[in-house]
Image (cartoon, rainbow, N blue to C red; front, side, top):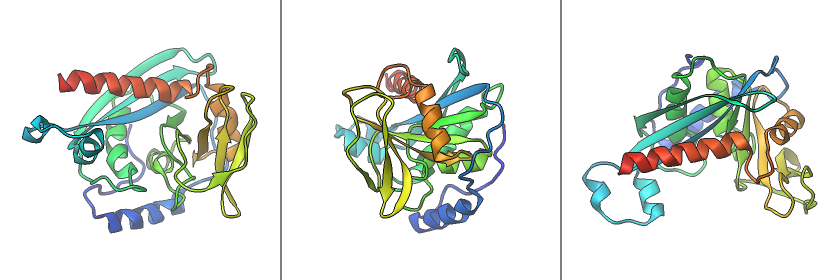
Length: 242
């Protein structure tokens, strides 16, 4: 697997915002998926290594001070959702913690993990924002454009915008809007739990992103691909810290 677009990662926050806006020109918000045979969930975790790691710190300080990233990808056959492959990678972080620019910390290690797969999945589910981003170019957009693969953002919280009251029934959803623009959806994946926030990553319409997200849910709040990827990198992080 190789990226379709090359970019630098060791840049300033101002340069990173310009890169987002430039790559945004390659973003596609309509369906161009082809047949979906394999889907994948991706997530990243961060660790602090070296002498600094011996100093006690809060989880917030540790997140900001992390100097290495661990990325994991879990692949399933679709639609039966049988796991077929998983891979992980660890890389040095080259970008500081800056809200709205988290893809510059996560995408490099996710690319490294994707390169270890035998086959690139047909659809990527990212634990983070897609189009529902202040510059309309969150992690799922960034990764999707770089590898030219359909991608969907499944976030646990809102980065920008808001939505009306959502019905409690599983399978319901409400438009996530930023002003007059519809940028994603609040989706109820299980009755009685908080919604998740679905948005387009790349090469997928919002309607299709919502439908496919529900298709990979298995009765818990977080869709299975991103939930399993989160557990995968959390386990890897614990093993690397011991």
